[in-house]
Image (cartoon, rainbow, N blue to C red; front, side, top):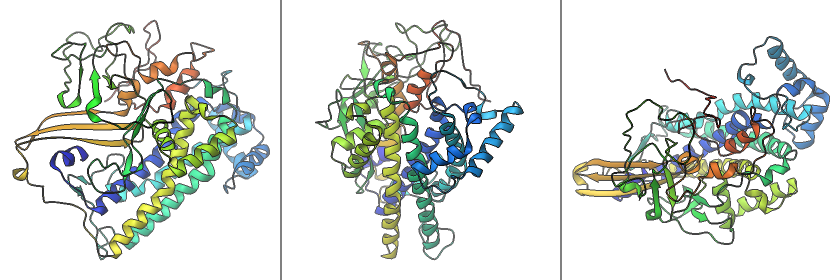
Length: 498
């Protein structure tokens, strides 16, 4: 939407901006909590070890870090019994394929049991709070109500089938529930787990360059600089200066990607001129084993001014911190202080994971603010949701081009579009996992994933949980070219879509 709106010079109504902020905001909160508990926690938490825990000691641990009500001895004993039944039946289900008992696990059994309990609680919690997304977007995760020029979410105080006082009150209730879980479960668990893995503040640094497009506009102008989470670039881990983002400096290589450019593999193309030419005609996939001197990835290699960039929650929090964002700075100092580590810990696997938690709380605190602003607009009689003045392609210029920036939960997402005679003639997107998971470029520069793995200790190559910790800290998109092979080309995972 933002790319086309930028191309056509469209300014959306205030209500549309607030609804977009709310849809994105609740997605951040839900997505980050799901990532921590269901996609990343088991890299640090030994589920089977929880069977050895003393439920009374687990209750004491939980009560020492939070006043969350589900923290009694009987509650944790019940969770432990449920887990024991799974194990004895040989039906671990979602807990089946992991490296239980691995020497890299360091949490005591009681902390493991607490994490298991909250893992299960988060499953129910996320299903409830994401109803905000469904109310405003009609569907999760891919909202159906976005329109060029605004939103299709109807506002009518007198209709049960549109946004009204009742639906706003219900969303405020869900927003409070989201914030409470983040405050009383997610953040305390994050600090508790991280305290046993402080050495991971020394691993997983990556490329040291960070890009954030910024998100949650405070005004309605296309690609505005007035953002709740600011836009900017950090180079070489230097937090003393935030560089501006210039979209013309973004380009993609295919030197080590299974694509070709008409001009050859050594050039980089700006997305407005981008091509996605896949011309390989042999067996698929086109590899027998990993060879980084050749083509080895389905991803292109995005670069900013020729440099690899990390995107995601860490990039956003670093840019916000360096830009003087008051709440971000407060929470960063709080978390670093509780862990007893310095600012250098941010540039690491542990820092990446902590940044995601900090961002979750910052956004969860803001959801009621946006809901309140939306309610105030409606009370004043402002029901505008869409600008249809540029809706007819006959009113468009013969040729136009634009770009739209969005910070998805996983990081910087850019869309570039070229329009001619009312039709899209070229469209390219550069997504977060492409930035982070990119292969090497024409200069041989590694992408963030590859760079972050350098120096990582691996105790057992057959069970590389340490590798998973760093890769999962980026929250890779499972749809963005994930393949798992060892150095000998043996396939570890195959995903079949039917």
